[in-house]
Image (tube, rainbow, N blue to C red; front, side, top):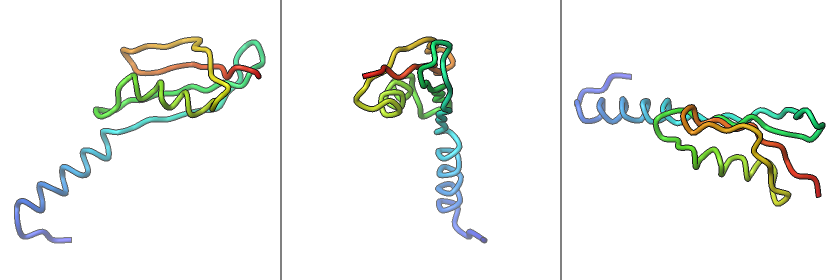
Length: 84
């Protein structure tokens, strides 16, 4: 794909940077007491620790969750879903 005008090229570079800067993952696991849990990480330039909290809330739904480990510095959480 050849872009002849510089603004279009800058826009393409900006879109690639934004797509690479927003990275969040969620891995299912079980915590030591047997409950289902998740490791939630929210790296990238566009994510904050608040994004991790939202993602954790969505993972466990209306049951809620307990935070077993959490770090605002590396934006990660280990959570366990509460049992009803």
